[in-house]
Amino acid sequence: MKKSILLLIILILVKITAQAQTEKQFKFEIDGTIKADSGKITLMFESDYNENKLGKLVTTVKNNKFSFSGFLSEPQGVTIYSDGGYRSAPFVIENGVQTVAINKDERDKVPDVSNSIMQKEYPLYLAFFKQHKRKRDTHDQKYNKIYRDNNYILPEDIRFKMEKELDILHKEHDKLLLSYTEKNPKSEIAFWRLVSLMGWGYEPIFDSIYDAFSDNLKNGDAGRVLKSKLLEGKQLSVGKHFPLIQCVNKNNEPFALDLFTDNTFTLVDFWYSGCGPCRAQFEKLKDLHSQFNTKGFEIVAISIDKERDKQKWENVIETEKLIWKQYWDMNGEESKRLSVRAFPTNFLIDKDGKIIAKNIPLGELNLLLNEKL
Image 1 (tube, rainbow, N blue to C red):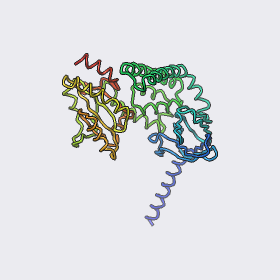
Image 2: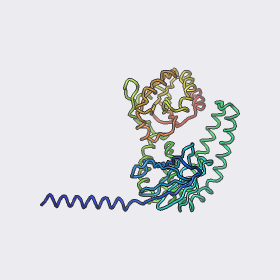
Image 3: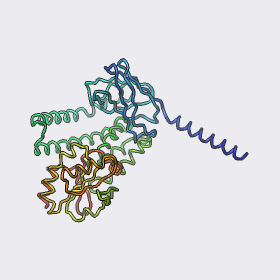
Image 4: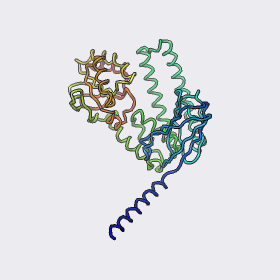
C-alpha cells in the first residue's frame, strides 16, 4: 500500500513538472517564401542559449514555400541558410505565427520578418546605427577594392592600416550598442546582438551592455547563460593573468603557466589546422620568432582541432616547420569555455603572466618587439 502511494506521488510530481515546463514554453511557427522550387532551408539557433539545446531545424522547399515550428521559452536569435550559399543576417523570432520572405540575392542581410519585434523595433535599431553602418560600408568597399587591385593579396603595411581602422570601428559600434541598450533596456534585438558579438570573444564593454538590460532579459534562460559566458570570457581580458588551460603537447605534457616566466613577451596564438587565415600568418610568425626568440620573445600555439583531426594538426606542424611550442585543446572545449571562438585569436603575455594585448596585429607586434627587446 505504501509503495502504491509513493508511486502515485511520484507520478503526480512528474506530471506537475511537465506541466510547468510546458507552460514556460510557447509555440512558434514560421511561414516562409523563397524563389526556389526545391531545396533545403536550415534555421540555426544559438544552442547554448535555449533550454532545449536546440541547434537547428531543417525543412524542404515546395513551390517557393517552407515552414518551421517548435517550442521555445522566450524569443530567440536565429539565422537562415539555404542551398546555393544563401545566408541571412541574424534576426529574432517570437511567439506565434510569423512570415519570413527570403531574397537569395541579399546574402548577409536581414530578411523581411513579420513579427512585432522585427516590425516595430528593428527599423528603429537600423536608424540608430545608420551613420555607423555607412562608415563600415565605406571602409569595406575601400579595402575590397585595394584587395582586388593587388591580386587578392594585401601588402603588410596596408593590412596593418586596415586592421587599425577596423578596430576603431568595432569599438565605436560597441559604444553605440551600449548607448542603444541604455535607451532600450527591453530590446531583444540588442540582446541577441550582444550574444552574437560574444561569439567573437569577450570585450570589457560587454559587461556594461549586459548590465543595461532589463531584469526580465537578464533573468531569462538566455540571460543567465550570457552572464555565465561573460564571467568566463573576462578571464582573458587585458590586465588579467592568463588562466591555466587544460591542453597538452604532442608528448601529452600539460600546458603550464611557467611557460611565460622565461620570456619578456609571449604570444599565445589560438588556431586550428583547417583555418585558412590561421595558416596564412605562419610566415609572419616565423619571421617574428626568428628575429626575437633569442631576445626574450616566444610563441605558444594552442590548437582547437577535433579529436578526429589530431593527425592533421601534427602534419601541419611538421610540413609548415612550426618550431615554437604547440599545444592541443582537443575539440576546443577550453577555448569555447573562455569564449575564444574566432580564429586566429592571439594574446600577448608579459613575463608575469599578465595579458597586455588581445588580437595584436602582427605588424604592430613587430614594432613593439623592435622597441622593447
